[in-house]
Amino acid sequence: MQGRSEPVAAEAAASADGPVPADAPVSIGGRRSLSDLPKAHLHLHFTGSMRHGTLLELADRHGVRLPDVLKAAAPPELRATDERGWFRFQRLYDAARSVLRTPDDLVRLLREAAEDERAEGSGWLEIQVDPTSYAQRLGGLTITVELILAAAAGAAWAAGIGIGVILAANRTKHPLEARTLARLAGQYTGRGVVGFGLSSDERRGRAADFDRAFAIAARSGLAAMPHGGELAGPASVADCLDLLHATRIGHGVRAVEDPALLTRLAAAGTVLEVCPTSNLALGVFDKAEDVPLPRLREAGIPIALGADDPLLFGSRLVDQYALVRSAFGASDAELAELARSSARGSQAPDSVKAQLLAGIDRWLTGPGPASPASTQG
Ligand code: ES4
Ligand code: ZN
Image (cartoon, rainbow, N blue to C red; front, side, top):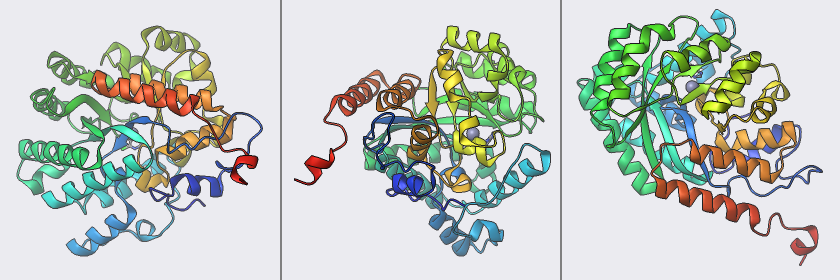
């Protein structure tokens, strides 16, 4: 089993387990450092971004008893296509979330998330959170959102990256709750909140029930970026487009089952936030080679790779790029194109996008990996 991938050693950790070590010479494509590739990270959940060491420390501090599998150094075995598997994932996620109790905990989580992103080459991060789960302990929804936004701004400044917050409703809760959140989110458009999301079990909460929440968010100028086409099939992706007017979709990988939908996504330029390790951990696909990334790319759909929940899935953003390199033999030019899609698909200010795109070009046109001759002197 793969060990948890600690931030700075992310690439090395990926290479220790992947079929083709990320730093080994490969016959197809190059092997520039993937941590040096400038990227935007568009699919990362708040609790799911927590460092494992922080989880243990906060559990200890607050007297929270964690399930044994969360205490272990290795990430848990999941597999969630059946309801029991998802329930297991959800239970562990909720247990991890329960260690985040004070304003300082949120500040720490965001500071570390920003540092970890910086270390693996992300210049821009969009972090996704359902603040209702913390609101009770922190004194209400508005104060919780304000806390998160202030902490995100501080963390971004300290790490030297940009951070946008996506407020995401939980699709297994009442749609009225989503509307309340959408109204609140809209008050922070342009002040830290960059989008409105919808997370949790697609097989339970139907997109149709959340159309009014998304309409409220849209009226306030927020982009729609719901999860879809992960645990449910292509109809769920179509619902995200038709009913929620999504410009980006979390996962969306099962769109591959419907060729007409692929054409539609490509024509609309809808970005799919593809999270390969998450798909493997949750049993959406059996092996890395089954993640339909090449088919989605060939259809002309912009892809932004994401890590989803590194805490539970054991790997971070740079590991997703390493996986695409090892599973599909992606060249450095192809990996650069994925990074470009992440920048273009982000809600980053134009100046940040331009900076990322220029950095990606430099990465690709630069000297490239050292040849054996030059490393030997
Ligand atoms: C999800 Cl929180 C989370 N993690 C992974 N996959 C998801 N799908 C919906 N919510
Ligand atoms: Zn997700």
